[in-house]
Length: 166
Length: 381
Image 1 (cartoon, chains in turn blue, purple):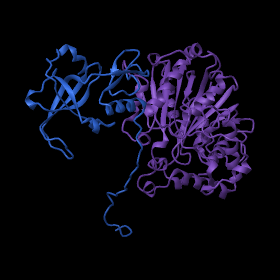
Image 2: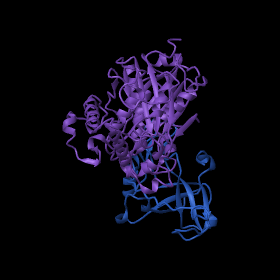
Image 3: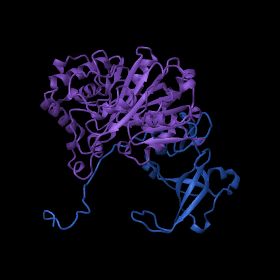
Image 4: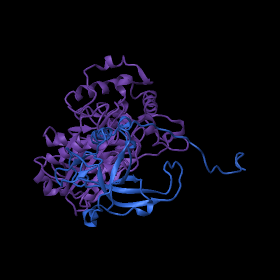
């Protein structure tokens, strides 16, 4: 016994909470306002001419401001995908579902999107998809405005057209 | 020839370009990367280089400040990270990133480095964020914020009979007056110390003027070695020595009225003769640092007095002509800005020699001293 202590203290709880005010920034604010109007807005690098979506105001390759705004298509290519079969806490979509990287027409970077209205077994690389938006009156500056992507019925894209974006 | 902390000869490395954002209370619309981007553009444009010319890139920032993990990776969007480059980051003020870059440049295989830092102190509760740097078992759970800790330090000075509230007010009044000539400063004014003493206490004995502002901002510096520096800049600000030292995490184990690590860092930077470990507790010491200009990173007014004494700065030394951290205190930024401002006084020929100091941690826990001169250590070579 050392001063009445017979067991070592091995753990203590020190609760910590800090609140932040998130700043989307100029570029992503433009993007989110575009989403509220039902369209995808990207930005082009003046140097390498790549179009980034969502834009971050800067080309991560060249480090220069991307000031040139580009309206992108509603359709794109599934460059790669994953079929989610595993349930997890907070899951809001019924499994199995498809999570895909989507390269919008006119963009030079793919982003992640949900694919619906197709049996999971039929998803494939190169499949053409289109964005399905919420009703016009429900549109807002949030990615929840895009319900999901679904097959557009266009012929599949050739592998060479998207191999750079995998 | 001056010696680095380890007693090695110093390869001549200089600050050749410096840029900073306008420091402000709140960046309403721009995120961190967007605040940083124009600063990076500016620091390159001043000397006609691009990131492809950089041998090394090092940044200083803090995820707790940004509220996002690996935020320094996203910050590289403002620089451009292709093709792959030599890059590093410190979770500290950019001044400490500059130390790492300077160390890299000592190795002779690179000739240039970009150093930058950014921080928006306005988006969270800064006092709580900074409390997380304290000892997590006994101190941080009590949530003593940095103002309270600086007030303890100020009280210790008063109790020691070294300085009083009027001295703190003098520091603030002079800083605000000088800041009027700094277009990037946030807090300026021409009130006298006597007038400032009418301010309310925030945490006694600290009145409003003895506290730094909350600041959003970013800054960047380019270092170059040897002939490369001379090619890029008419009057490079040569780093003749640099050192940084750290005191114990345990605040109760420190004498808060003195800054022995600042003293030791100044010795390591070659600004003071070596040997002595002590620090004067008041007045000007006989072997004080002799420079034209000193930019001291003293977020709280009493800390400038502690630093002056630790360095033994005489009245002839112009201290914080930029207004110092009392005029703008971007957390993670203000230390690197001190090096940039001190270097600028050499580059614009208002000074031949300068000292820049940066601090980190509570109550001047960590201290970096950078010695700058219009000629490299050991003269031209």
